[in-house]
Image (cartoon, rainbow, N blue to C red):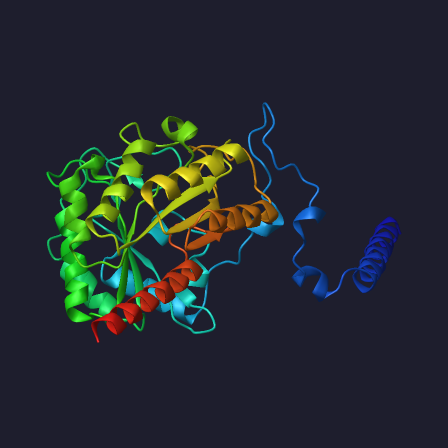
Length: 359
């Protein structure tokens, strides 16, 4: 009798819970509710790290889809088979799905990382592995990389590399050889190279500039005031600025590009002043501004999540002071697919003007 009563009570309990959940489901939000992207102003969460807080909750505008898709899988397998490294994977880029799958044009892009996956620097924001003595560069990498890239259906590629302070030329000849190999096999392929600072060595910078690349990129990373806190002790704002200045001096027609991370504790005034110096002193053409995201618990904490409207305001400011192009948004990274295709149009326009003059 007691067993029967308990069984009946359990049935009633679960049946009532079912009715309650059914009612919540029928009267609750529909699919459109979940698909709708909330506006920045609707978010009531804390965006600034308070004293004693460990981490901020990620706001909705920074949440991305899990990368998947046919093109993503194909490109991932190709990279693995050819033993190619990408900054997309090593730096845990949130846009990897968008770039590797391609957009409406279905053209996928990736940022190839040369000279191995171990860096001699130890910047506090970067998730790339650090080593005092990385493995020697693969002598076949330039040719293998060129062969792989030229087999893909792309017209713009970004090359980058780890810092190799352990090498006599800091890897500059290896990078230049890769660029030359690509251009030899596919002359019309546009190449952007995101270089290290080479400790300010002008000979290294000259080696890259003379390799026939189309866009010379080097990131200053953060505002002047936070350089020593964010970057490796061997890097600094002046050194990075001088890299960009010298690249432009060597070839005034070369497109130059740099990037800033926001949310590390900088002020709006510091951002604008840094942008002004980059444009005024180094005559940089293109700038990207994106939200810093803490890759692991060992790295610098996010001090602030910047609202999308602020990124838009900074974009307008950048264009007002003379940048040809400013990619500014929470998910923008230094190698950013949308930005790459805008720069492609700038380069094509420059080529057409040059051809018209020569006719």
